[in-house]
Image (cartoon, rainbow, N blue to C red; front, side, top):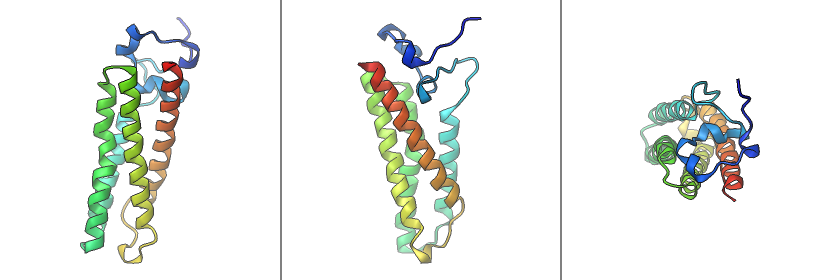
Length: 153
């Protein structure tokens, strides 16, 4: 059996781009398609579901509805944008779409941080879970972008 090498040690010519996926970029480790160590799409799906539950638990006030709407848009968009990442037409497009996911995750983090200090919003369902997960997802996307940029040069 051939030993897999990390992406940072294995240059990927453009011809191989079609087979390149985010799971191969995460932390610079190569994950084969047959045995994926890590499935980012499933993680983003679970995160989006938690965001939906959180927004549904916010109070039906003007502030609650505004924050819920913003959180719902930014917190679920990384899932759909990840599909765009997988359909990227070039490495440059791939990196650009990763950055869009990162941008949406950072916006979600800011809206979640706003929920904490606003007393009349209470503590919504999944608040701590969402806040912790968005931090982790941001780190994953930052690392993926850095790796993809390193490989692009």
